[in-house]
Image (tube, rainbow, N blue to C red; front, side, top):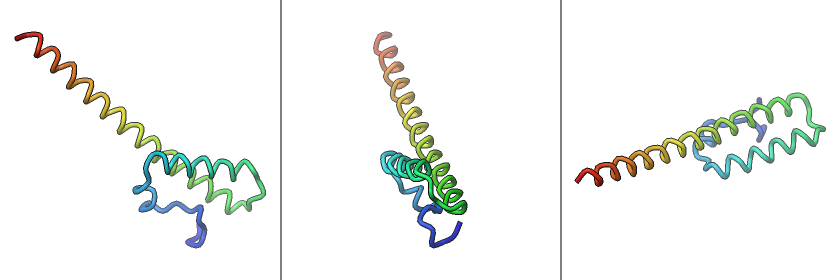
Length: 85
């Protein structure tokens, strides 16, 4: 990976991406890889970027699952407590 390669992952740029932005960039990376014609070095950089973007999407989804579970648990606890009064 070189610094002038836009496909090279930058941890700072990944951390600031929303789920939708990361997914959109991942789709673009996959499209570029599927189109072919890239050098080996560029293909490797794209692959690494794609892996990093996929991880970012997974992190967002895991966070969403945890938030939903917390909200569901709070609703269930509140409903059970309300039923005991």
